[in-house]
Length: 136
Ligand SMILES: Cc1cc2nc3c(=O)[nH]c(=O)nc-3n(C[C@H](O)[C@H](O)[C@H](O)COP(=O)(O)O)c2cc1C
Image 1: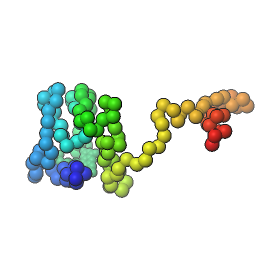
Image 2: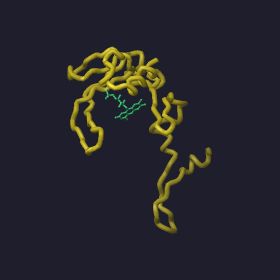
Image 3: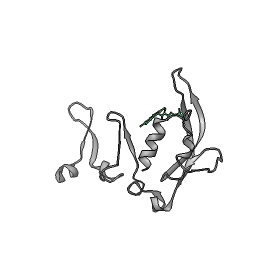
Image 4: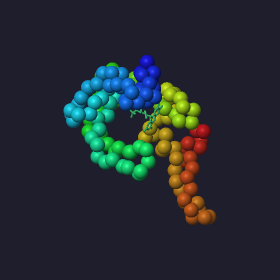
């Protein structure tokens, strides 16, 4: 359902439809930035810079001042991707996707890699380390 309303909000313009009724808003620390109650995770941003490159759109740079989520989406106080189930938008196929399977342990899988200097060329080379090659 959230994906349907989100897409609708991206299709229609606020000049023709009052999009503020699509979601229930709430306000945080800044008291001026509306956020969306239905979203598992909200990042409250303060406008830092507006970039205008002369095209049809401007780019807004925001500083995150606060993050909001409910207990049901957290594990040990941190956002849990399996509970949040984020919507991912892919441009080449204009499709919304779910996040897939667990891939690898962070801060650990990279330890299988090593950079060493080639004795003949003296150039640095990257490769799986001894232990990783043995268990491959
Ligand atoms: C899937 C999807 C992705 C979009 N991505 C962007 C984007 O990255 N940048 C952008 O400026 N507009 C993007 N849009 C278009 C804006 O959502 C759209 O211009 C805006 O809703 C128009 O509303 P407004 O006239 O009230 O600003 C996207 C729309 C959809 C449906």
